[in-house]
Image 1: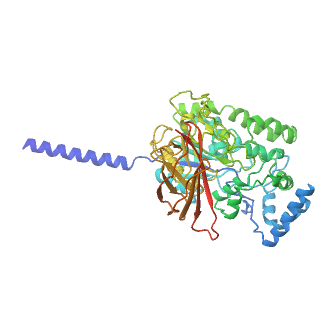
Image 2: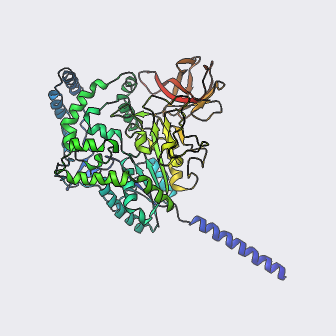
Length: 562
């Protein structure tokens, strides 16, 4: 009898313990609340009456407007005089230019319209649910996700002071001990400035820098130094596609036409309309790379009249940017998980010699050494190893254009090849990686999960087609890999017409139709002889089903031969 009673008592204790443990697990605190720090021009700006001045109202040009503008542009190209073009632009886009002019910062640092962001009260800054990535992250953080809106015109160090107050408010509202920062674009620079100034408070759980110009970007310096402006229509069209503007024929033509002949018109436009408004935006100055900062500062700023701007931008460059490695090392020593996410293989819009995500160059976002866009390392290239010299770590990208051994954090930096600046929310691979980085411990570095290697090819609709040879990982092939798996990343059905390897036609038999999100396997006719460790250019020609005019498009990637 006693034995049965003890057995019953033990059973009750075990069941009760199991229930308590399950309840504890169910009620365990979620991951730290995530604060998304908006990027450059990513926040609305409001005047004292609550009118949203930025982004400005966009005037839709008519066909008549275009017919008037085109001859004026070409007249300027011939004569070097763009007065007529600028006058017609003012007539065509009156509302846009009116609102844009309201965002001007004057030479003395004043703002006539006293613009402010939507709010810095945490209770008013919960995610509005418009960003798919952030909604996924919010599921893993108990719904705690906030947008920190930034006045992108101001110097980053001033915005970081406001972020400190915002973080205190979030901690008070949630009861959490720490927060995590999602620094997108210029938002990453704000996060860096916060870490430099307030890192000693040890309030950060995780920080992800996503396409962030932590070391500046050539786009900013090219915009400030008009002589270096070298527009890439290809990048501009691709950037537009990332933003949902797919103008079909022009996207195709942009791959074929070199439009640098338009740079004269663009420089005239910048001098007439952009410079008077944005020249004294501190946020723009903070994104100028260190090696160009002093020259551009001497060229454009007066030491006395713009002392207010120079003081703040100097602080960012020489205290934050120059010491970022020490700042991040200190944060990681305190237990903060730090990650860098970078897009590559997109020409910079303002200077197409540089490799990057279309807006931020590869070095500016990570410290990685990169070739100029379209070039590759030779077969005998060896990693520089300035930060990671471990021979067992392969930090050379499969498209042979990046050396991540020079990154600030080689083991905590991920690159998505073909990933544009605004694309993180459109790429399923990127969404999944970011969700893990913020919500659990599945991914802690580039070695922790084979699904998330250091280098990966973009999987959004902009990248169109995924190409995998045999059993090789994405980015590699050998002469024996004649079986190819194609993945349709587009949002509609596509028909693959041909496949080329190093310019040689290796498949052109039966057209292959692949449904949206689907895969198809194809046997190539042959593969050319491939030399190990060399770059191999692969091109897939296809047509999308939704096109009224059937145009042959192509997806081009560069892989490494094994």
